[in-house]
Structure formats: structure tokens, C-alpha cells
Length: 335
Ligand SMILES: Nc1nc2[nH]c(O)nc2c(=O)[nH]1
Image 1 (tube, rainbow, N blue to C red):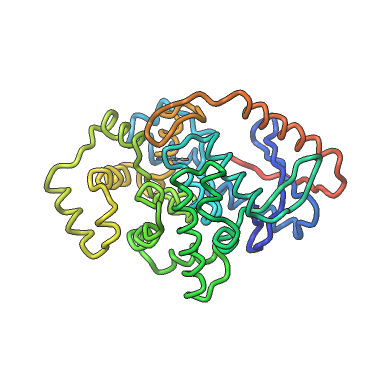
Image 2: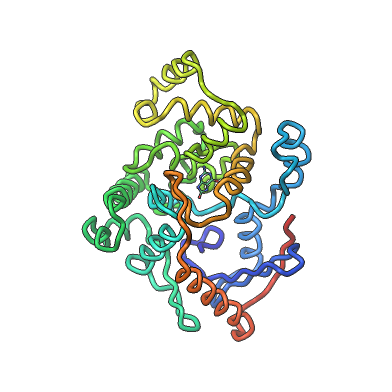
């Protein structure tokens, strides 16, 4: 993770206490300021947003679907926008186990070594320049990225160039700056100028990487929820209006599906300023907590071998907490 405004990556350890109200966190090695670490996690977990408040005061009064659900567990995180962009390019027609593998493979093949702990080696997520200079399309194909290889390389090259053109060195800062003085529609238009980025990926970056809490990424799952539970479907006039609205945004006009964009707008109207969070709650219920759901709607079971691998890693990390004297533990309250 990048902590605060730092460009360097740190390895962090997190554990939710059994009473579920407390989160233990730690950074390994030279992590700098403890207050910066605390404030990083407050931002990362978006502890400024109370799900209980959203359920009780916004969603339940307007939407009976939420009365049966619990305001616990599902939050939209404030993720690093460049990692979010590349991860969602990898997510195309893919499931969580394979997306995780691809992201790890990008780090271990093209990132920089951060540290080695208890037999586990940690690498940074490669920057756009690192990917553009260290990876090739053929190399990525050989690593199993398939047709996504071309999108990743072209996106990395374009973003690296965009940064040079605007005099910004950091991927995080470049993408965050897109939102300054720009409407959502303009940010989405720019994000969709990268190869492999359609409306769903752009909206996931807006919601999870750029903190646009009202954005609802509409994919097969959300579209199914909208039609089945809310009877939302666009009529010809609304589609025509949307097409006309996007005449001034050529990439949006080309890439958008107006029926899905209409669903996004209707759900924003229904759920309000944190509509992206509301869809997160329903999306996770819809895909059933499975890690095998793909963007095409197909659900495959997660393989046992990767589950065991994850559990082993967690065991190692928890052990680290007691073994290493340089780890500092602090606690933050979550709702
Ligand atoms: N429509 C959505 N797609 C998603 N993918 C992902 O990883 N999270 C989401 C989500 O909340 N909504």
C-alpha cells in the first residue's frame, strides 16, 4: 500500500478483532509516522461514511429491499486509482481468483521488491512507466493475461505519456487531478480514452478509485437487479435524449450503452448521493459472496488450492505481529 501521499509502498497487516468493532493495523519496517498510518486507514476504509446512517435514514425509508439487509460488512474502499484501473481492466470476463492472480503477477514480474518477511516476498504495484518499459504484450500473454495484455500495455503507455504532457509524476496524483473542476461525465470520457476501458470499468474507477460515491457501475448483475427488483427499463425517448446528451462526448457516445446508462441514472435517483455504496450492498448479495463470479454473469467455484494459499499467507502474517518488534499496533473504531 502507498501510505498517505508517499509514492513508496509499505507492507501493512490488518486484523479485525473478534468483537468486530475494532481493527488492528500495523506497518512493517520503516513506515514513518504512526498518525499518517492511522489517517491512511481512516480514509482507506472510508470511516467518514456511516453505513448505519445510510441504511436508517436514506435507503430503508425509500427502498424496501434494504429493510431485510444488515448495515454490516460491505463498504466501498478508497482504493489507489491506478491499481483500480488496471485491476478492473483485468476483471473483464474474469473471476476474483484469476484477477487476484493477475494483479500479483503484475507486481512480482514488473513491480519493485518491498520486503521479504517470513518467506513471503512483497512487491509494489508497477507504475505506468514501469509497466510500459518492463512489460510487453507478448510477455503478458505468456503470463496468462490473454486479450487483456494489449489493453494493459496500451493503457500504461498512454497514461505514462499523459502524465509527461501534464507535468505530473505520480499515477495517483494524475488520476486524482482529473476530478478537480471536472464533472463525472468528463472524468468518465477521459477514463474511457484508455484502451480496454468501457463504461463499467470507468465507473468502477470513479466509485472505488476516485471516491465518487454516487456512481453505480452497471454490469450484468446490477442490470438484472434493476430489471427484476425495480422494474427499470428505458423507453425510446429517454434513450434518444441520452444519445443527444452525449453528442459532445465522442468516446462516451461510442462506448456507452444508453439502456445501461439509463439504469445508472435511475438508481442514482433512487439511492441518492451514496448510490454506489447501495449497489455494492446489493451486488455482493447478488453474486452470493462467491469469488467465482465473472463479468459475464457466469459463476464458477473458487479452487481449493488458492483458498489454502490465502489461508497460509494470513497465518504467516498474524504470526508476524508477535514476532517482529518493529511492528506497531494501533486501533481504529469502525461502524
Ligand atoms: N457492478 C459492480 N461491479 C463490481 N465489481 C466489483 O469488484 N465490485 C463491484 C460492484 O460493487 N459493483
